Image (tube, rainbow, N blue to C red; front, side):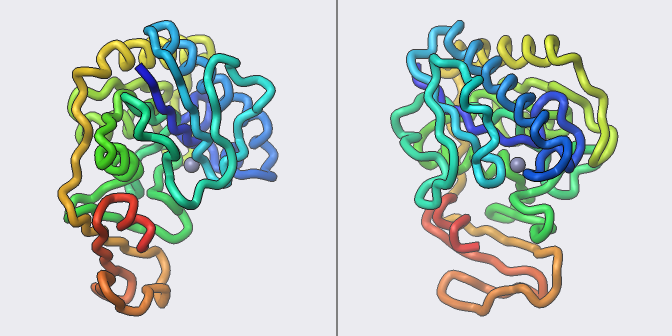
Length: 258
Ligand SMILES: [Zn+2]
């Protein structure tokens, strides 16, 4: 069993403030260590359950967040940009873990909720269904026949994951109180939950179906600001002064057109 892990930062255990997830901010350097610890706990669980190969992509912001010299030596890692594909070499993997993810934009009492960009994305739909990053990444993986087997983060993203993905293992490492506040666990407890969840997900991998989005894929984006909607062109329709819609052959292609 080969396992792919996408790692975001907002849903990592111990993280509940914007200053922890932005490079250059006072709490960021420490939070990178929290992220690295969750990664190592996840890798541990995957190998414990018999994974042959684990590839982990640092997927938050510019992709330079993991402390490379503290990563578990058994896995392989992707850091930095990947403009061509969001998940390079995904086709040779059997299951995808979304580690440290967050609830979609507009979710209530959800830690650091947003969809792709807090600054510019207000609301987002895939084929008419209001969606967040869980559906985006599960949809991209689904187009390659790969199921999302586990999601970790706060209680809101876990509920969102269960709503979209039947049979997915969810690991709640914190509970949202506000956009920048929540109930946290100790690091020992959070890491144990991540390891146990990853092991369970790897064991159940064969039973979980990929998330299939109907093609062609229609994505509608409502922006935060006025006056930013692009001009109409082929496969791009303007809905109103803040909203437009694109149609792409698959999830990743539609996403690139936004
Ligand atoms: Zn992020």
